[in-house]
Length: 74
Image 1 (spheres, one colour):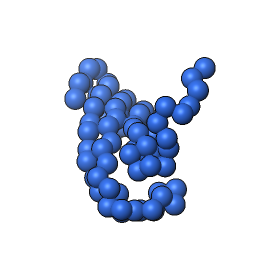
Image 2: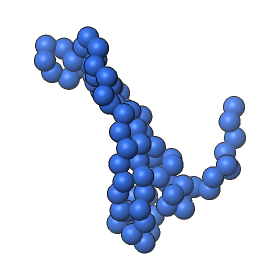
Image 3: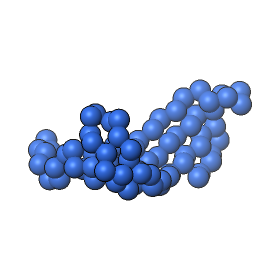
Image 4: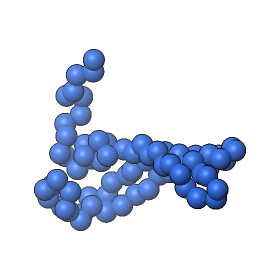
């Protein structure tokens, strides 16, 4: 975590067991890892804005729903 002024930035990593229910991807109790960054902006002691980036595409690859290296970058 990094805090400066009215901003707080959190970098996180979490591991979970996929049990199904996401985009009709079947579950085989796969272990997946999620990473991300959250940026909080506070005003008068409350969260005014929240910006989040996470690794959903990487999780879809881990679950076999997306093939790696098959997209085009422009």
